[in-house]
Image 1 (cartoon, rainbow, N blue to C red):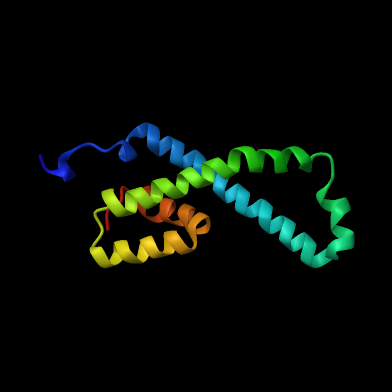
Image 2: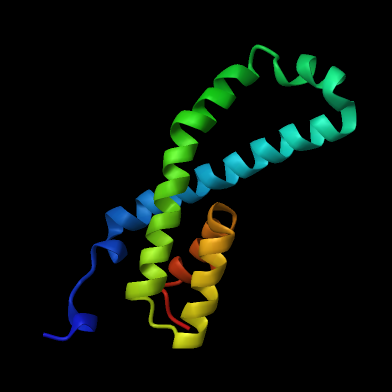
Length: 123
């Protein structure tokens, strides 16, 4: 049987929902890290502690680490799998996307999700 005719787990409704949640968590994680970096750059090391250690941010950092990090990793692995195995893109497009996904992994994974995977993986 032809591989392209077999249904794939990565294109199932459950996987699409999971990757949607993972992409949202990934974007949130990127924004949280950008917030911390910009705060550090603007206020310096001495002024950063009171801003980043407020009571309501501690649960945010905890959730970003315990939920966001594994979701980010699984989104990245899923998008690499989709690009390498299930994508109907041409070989040069696959190679370019794979290089982007490997070298800029968790930053490019939500971009691949929004531009390729969410649209069905077609060119």
